[in-house]
Length: 295
Image 1: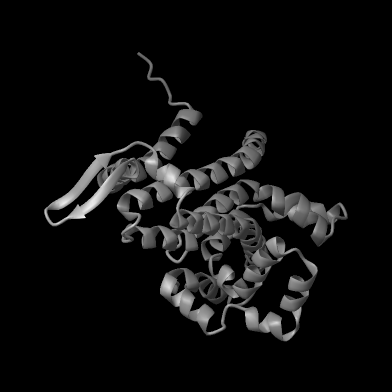
Image 2 (image 1 turned 180 degrees about the horizontal axis):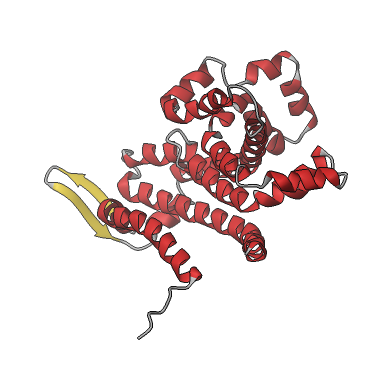
């Protein structure tokens, strides 16, 4: 009998499943139980007793209470503020990462050192470190205030729009700190683009700007999608995120407790997943079409 050769598509799928399988095994072993417990707590009244935890199921009361109590209003306000910040921060991080990756992809002396410099914040940054930098004025607000940019924005724009922009400028240096991984991903993608394509475009009369928009950006479209998802998850799970801080504060609050905090966490989780789903709905069809053309 002749042995059937495994199709290319099946081989690629098996390789993909092998990478995903590592995460699935880790999730089942270390995260599934806390994940399920938080869902049960969100639907229950939870009390911490000396002998353990008392859990009494009471349906969606915690979710309803989020929109009725003061702690819930604070959480919702933090969530709305986070969503506004995401709209401004994610595009800036992506654009900055693409530009730096393009520069680091040039034949420059010592570019390995520059790559290390841009990736270094990923290693050393943490919630307390970033908070300390912001408190000492290293976020970037002092630079813009000295030139009057902050006051111009506050005086010309609506408060609902000016507040996230001012927050963006006040933490611009810190935001750039979140771009290390994205720069490396874009850099890996750029290094796979055949240099002969750029040479052919130059012969046809294309300038650097046209080459960037017609060769570089289309080549990175799938990686842009990946990096947008990664950046949203990175910002959403940052330990000093105001939404996460609000959830943590409610865990040990007498009026709310573990049940309410779990309900808030699930609301936050659903909002973030909807955001990721919206990004996938916008970018994924185009990415799949381009992948089909590349084959």
